[in-house]
Image 1 (cartoon, rainbow, N blue to C red):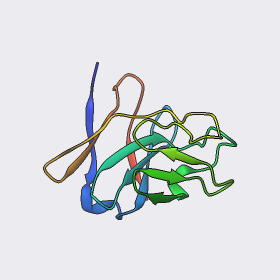
Image 2: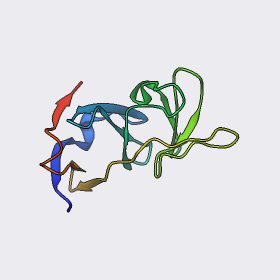
Image 3: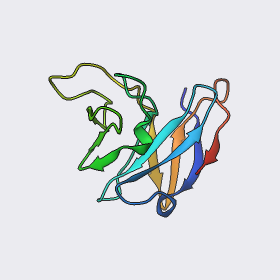
Length: 113
């Protein structure tokens, strides 16, 4: 069941940057590309749990700040030769607002930094 929760405005996330949303499932990194697309991944690299929200966004990818693993923002998969996946979170834009799919039974969103 989808439960869309407004977390911020698109302009609140810097281009080629991220913001973190706290949830009961853990921190969620919400990314904004140069073309104003929004993606959300759990904020843990599959390699050594590095904070993806502190990584470098380029195109539709993010590079983990710890060991330079590159992950696709759309599906969380690491680029070869690395293997692993950061779980995705549904994200969408409605007008200028950013929403995440956060089932109420499992999460309590609190926008952070």
